Image: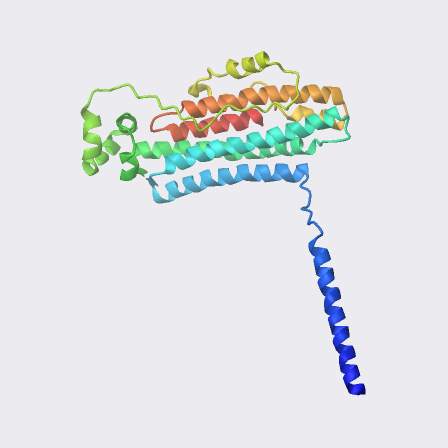
Length: 310
């Protein structure tokens, strides 16, 4: 009898323990899981990381071209798209940095942070030599194509319009022309003998004009339109001229350190205005690139952006 009582006692103890465990699990399941808050510094690092990934794509494409001595189908599109996405990623980073700086100024230092703007400025300056090297490599690839040291893949040529094919053929040196005429006569015979025609203009709309301007600034719509339109006439031949003004974001950092909030607010508005103009110049340059060499022209547009924003 005592043995049966002990067994019953142990059963109730086990059931009670299981009940407590299930209750605890149910309670824990009802507690909401809070994601860790991402700081402004972490956000800017993520955005700059996205930009760096695009530079890696351009370098990977150049490495493949230089290693294989072949400009393959898709290389032009890959390089063009990566330049656009790099500029967009940097736009997002600068926009975020200016928003944080504006919040810092408006709150008299109680909210916001100048760290994202400082981080952006340092990243731009660090990337400038890398982009200038990419431009040099692009020019070198172009020269080697003209000399015939790097050949353009047949499938890539087939995708070119007649006008673009003529542009490619006319850019080649005499020995390289003979190689293409001998190896791919069906692709070049017509453009080598037909009368010269004006190249058609190709306008892509993948890039759109953007604004770095923080919200709630006092810049009017008319002033903004003037900022955007005033620099739209820049020619591709002028894209490598360095700007006469200093870095657009750098001066704001010192004002934040000095806690000069009114001057910081004005600096942010000025930086946003200049950055808007610069980015829209890039978009105009990118959209204006056409023909066989648009990938090279767009690489130059990107160098202009980094030089001016840095």
